Length: 218
Image (cartoon, rainbow, N blue to C red):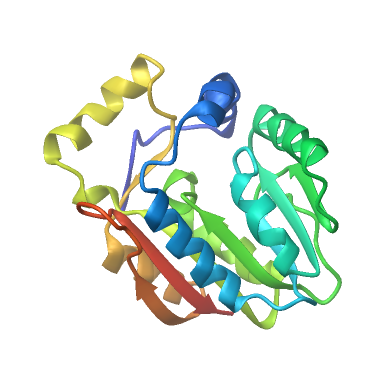
């Protein structure tokens, strides 16, 4: 499993996402039907008493949709600017039990006894250290808790696009950290972190879906 580029910092990633947050918030969902399938799948896994931690929440759209199905929902992101936008959305659409905080898997607030569910959408391929991130996630789950991720499998991209990632980074069009791995490597990493994988799915409704949805139990 490799990362492009090899030398990255959280600071560089924070700067990138802070800079692009406003344009990101305005960008349309690429596959609305696939997105709705993911929401329905995750929603069916939630219970009204669940304490949920979301990592890499971006501008909060998914949290706003799913939080009403849980008891409490802490949505976090590396980028303070993303969280600012998410809080603006929350003010416009108040949702009981939902909070937004700037944090990562290693710094997110812990729940007494552990969270019932941790989710990360379009997230794991953007972390600098995947094994460490998965270890932090498992440590924040209660025994038997659920981890649900939706992750882009970059090795499935056109090779020319993969080769362009370092150049895109240099011109500010890609984050510093991009994990280059496929579904099999992702699942192996999740299992190696101590999770039992219950399902691996693709929810895309058009074309080739690069994003693997993994449901795992800690």
